[in-house]
Length: 253
Image (cartoon, rainbow, N blue to C red; front, side, top):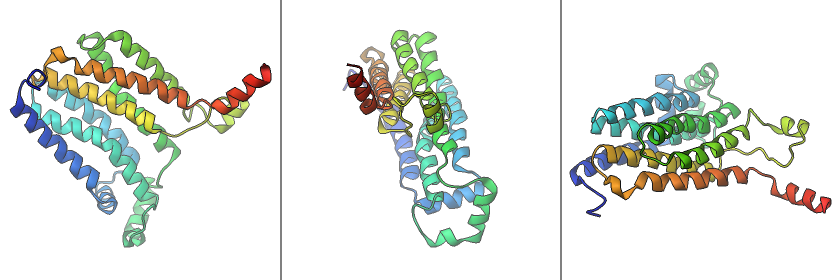
């Protein structure tokens, strides 16, 4: 560990901030989240959008060497990826509490578009992941020379293909009209979420290197990027309708 960690005090300070944000957002009850959303006028889709500028402000603070503020904003932006979905499920009534009968909450939902899980929200969530991670990883690959640019491009191609295989670019009607029944419409999968996690770990590892916490000779950003690339392509392959493809192949033979 001595060869990996260069500054233990900084590491403990960052871990305290990150774990505090994780604990607050991960374990806050849905009822409390809805109350906060109602008071701030935030819908789940707004939360999805907000985490994009938070990410880039956090990266800017990291470049300025403002360790604590950068850690706070970056961990907040990444954890809001979980919070928007949690809030959306709460709005959709997946849990029933006496808060659901609150007239003010019902009015708020109708005025601000809080209708639970929506197709646009399901599409915006992975798109927000890409808008956070892909430009940042591209900068690290081409400008900072901290990542292998060829590996980044392989991952980028998979991400672009995966995005094109999702609504609204493809839906059941579009698949049928284009005779693309070898594809199947799917929501975000655990493969895609795992890919996004490794992308954020890549960025986080570089931030730790830049701030002198991790030894750059270990190459953790490249290690995480390799796993992100693997899961990006696994996510693409998981969207293929393999049963249909095998049946057509057997019919051809």
